[in-house]
Structures are given as structure tokens and as C-alpha cells.
Image 1 (cartoon, rainbow, N blue to C red):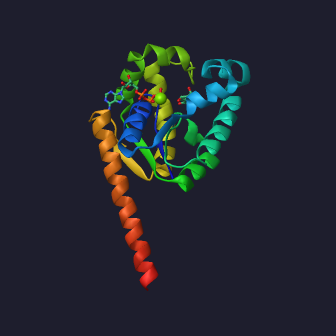
Image 2: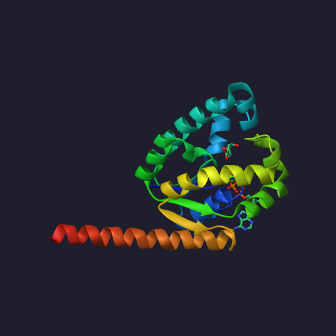
Length: 186
Ligand SMILES: Nc1ncnc2c1ncn2[C@@H]1O[C@H](COP(=O)(O)OP(=O)(O)OP(=O)(O)O)[C@@H](O)[C@H]1O
Ligand SMILES: O=C(O)C1=C[C@@H](O)[C@@H](O)[C@H](O)C1
Ligand SMILES: [Mg+2]
């Protein structure tokens, strides 16, 4: 089983993936980092040389591979859910957790993170706050549709969020098993 974290840049996927993996004793990995390692280029360089379509193809292939692992927390890229096959692959591999936060919170976090800004290409050429508002609105239905768990990622710390995810997923698994037991008895 793989637990996949989805959500816009700055929602906390990397921070929470590490903490959740520690709690469960699982591995964690960041899809963006694997894409960069495989390409030997930064995401910005991939966008420059291959355009967004080239990056998206690499992203789809990388996530497909990573989802073959077991006991893994996968921090996906902010736009990974744009691909239908990736959405289906994520759901088939285990719980998909959307870290949901308002556009203003995301923009504040992205603006405060100089490293992220230098390494991540602009998607629209607009200011960060205008881009987050516009792109989040487009993607929100896809995050919602793909998620099997939705978590408020603005109101609490990464530690609290990791604890909450563990709790919700454990409850969902217990429910699934008790439904299967009922099916086996009937
Ligand atoms: N729950 C939180 N409360 C406050 N700050 C947070 C929270 N989660 C993450 N942050 C901060 O927001 C920034 C972005 O977090 P992080 O890198 O984990 O997000 P991400 O979803 O992996 O972003 P990206 O898509 O750019 O990789 C970091 O500076 C992190 O410390
Ligand atoms: O939101 C997006 O489309 C992106 C988010 C990042 O995680 C990277 O995957 C890349 O910069 C694209
Ligand atoms: Mg990250």
C-alpha cells in the first residue's frame, strides 16, 4: 500500500510525508526529487528544455513506478493530479490524502520559501498570489475527486496533521475490514 499526499505547492506534502512515515515506520519519497534525479536536471531546467508536456510525461511515468512500492508515503507534485491515469493509479494503490489550504495561506508559504521559488517554474507568468488563486480554482475539483481523505492543512502543525491522517486512515482500514468480514459471513 502507498499513501499518496496531494495538494497545491506549499500545502505541506513534504513536511507531512516525513512525519507520517516516521509515525508508521514506513519510507517516504518526494516525486519531484525523483523526477529531477532521473532527468539529471532541475524541474525548472526540464520545463525550459522540454516544456510542461515533457515534465508531465516524466511525472506520470515516475509516479506510476513509485506506486509499485509498498509501505511508502508518496509526496506528489502539485500538478500530478492533472493526469487521469495518475489519478486512477494513486487511488488503486491506497489512500489519497489532499492537504487542503486556502489560496492566501499557500501564497504566503510559497513567497516565504526562497528555494522553492528559485527551483519551481511559474505556470502562468503572473504574480504568486494571482497564480495560486487562478490555478487552485482550476485544480480544486480534481484534488477533491482524487482524494479519499481531505485534511485541513492550514489550521494545525505538520505534526498534528500527520497524527490526524494516521487516525483517519486507521479508522477507514478498520471499517473496510469489518465490512469484508460481514461479506465473508453472509
Ligand atoms: N501545517 C503547516 N503550518 C505552517 N507551515 C507549514 C505547514 N506545513 C508546511 N508548512 C511550511 O510551508 C512551506 C511549504 O511546506 P512543504 O515544502 O512541506 O510543502 P509542499 O507541499 O511539499 O510544497 P512543494 O509542492 O513546493 O514541494 C515550508 O516552509 C513549511 O515549513
Ligand atoms: O503545481 C505544479 O504544477 C507543480 C508543482 C511542483 O510540485 C512541481 O511538480 C512543478 O513545479 C509543477
Ligand atoms: Mg514538497
